[in-house]
Length: 140
Image (cartoon, rainbow, N blue to C red; front, side):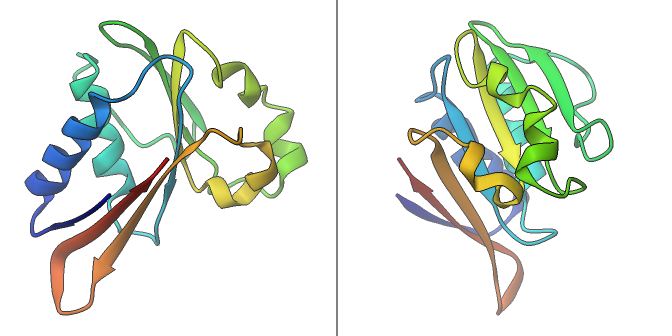
């Protein structure tokens, strides 16, 4: 599936519809350059899954943030600051790849080999001619 959004609220709407398809045990690998909208997309998914926390900060420094949704738990991870798969694996991230968790991972390319084969890929790309527009491609 591919979508073109023209503003942040459109990206959030796509993420909200996508969230309706998720179930505990799903792992979502979010790819995109800095500023492409991975955190915007993740926050919208979490809101659609029933997370009511007032703030949903990017887990850039915490690496893993845990939340309670209406029918699942959500782990939001950011592997940007980590160096390799071994370092990431030592954090116990595989524990989040099964129910009751839905796992959202930003910068998964830091440890592709850790992701389950069933991981869902979300690619966010900036559109050259419009700084607010994004191309979003979702692959299962």
